[in-house]
Image (cartoon, rainbow, N blue to C red; front, side, top):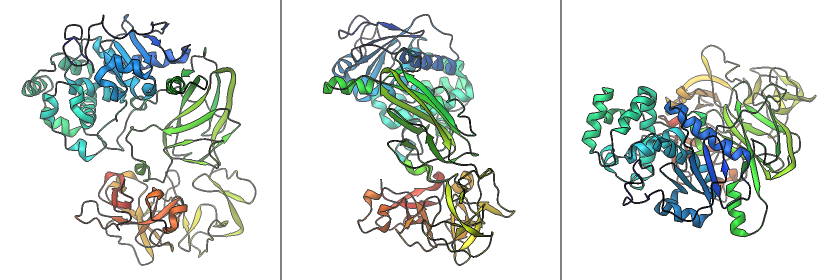
Length: 573
């Protein structure tokens, strides 16, 4: 909670004068914008201060604020001390009181961005109207809840009148935070930070909703209620990487097209090394282990290189990668272009290539603090479709995977018979689908006129997903174009033989008419389901707008494709 008159309003829940509070560790470490105290680690790494400074500087840039000489005080605390400092706010893992931030070590990554926005906004005498204050923190930094309504029913149903009347942040509820974040994000983009902050400065927690609406109308010339609905964000709307916490420096070029070079040492004196306060909290609680740090990079996967990636080199410690996405980005929302991974550990914890779709990712290396520990690896596409640089006897597929190919592959349009896990039987640029060598496609390799690219990356005639208006022997699958998929459009591809809940390959298909290959939470499927041990399951499409969407009982959830008019049946989650 951010309270602009905290020293005067000590009677407000969670607010206390600067002179009160628990016995805190000294602010012994100082960056350019923050001072830090902690009882969790004996030494604060240089990268920790740089990480915090960067977040404050980002807030100022987003709000067009000049830097302040006054630093923000940040305490990274053990669970008990943080609870004492934050009182009722500990369910969120931390709080901001004036220009002071208190965080439980376990919530460092999830809450620090949010609370730093509050602290910096306080220095400008910011609004203590909860909907505006929390909305600003969500819009700029996200945090421990989500970023955006993400089209969830709970958020879409919130009542603006009730949210404007709330005088305590906790009373907003999760949906209120998210809806407030969408509202403030829209305001900042349309009206600019100066005007938005001026409106916030005119409001207090007790300003009546009708007064807020009148001031909004006078300042911006539009209706607050209309804009509140207009600016709701869905799961696939654009979010800036920094809004999602993806603010690490980009990984250097890995030397080959589409590759990232990951080189670093786990020296606490390095401006790249950040203390792992989450691990420090565990160490303090369990009484054993060593202090850890982490280093992060951002890495953009372009459409040209999306597909299979591999790690080249040996890893000491733990290396992981995650898509820059809102906290509540449901796993099934990546299944439009293909069943891409949203997060994963990397070798040696995981074997085989990693399937990455277009987007910005965060790569994180974790290791015990040790100046002698280093990392020198590259994350690179397995192969190039254009270069066909796989070993002899193999072909680089449209998914950038090297696969064995028969000595005399069939040409495009010819009949074919593809054995499960057998070598590719069609020529380069084609794939055996339903017994026919079918042209492969992606954003760089387009289909013939009159055809489109399905998410399985093969070409086909246009069709309607809810009507399945394809010829006999063909099935309508979702388009690779997100806008077309959201509109319920797809392409007709030759049907394979897979029946309901049969195993299939999410990148290659294998399902019969009316079915599509989907990733699934297999632990929720019946024991006898053949796809429990497979990467994908053959399931029907459905109509999420119908009283009866048409999903079988074992996969009753009709998940909208791209949030649009058609869906696929999955296990209820």
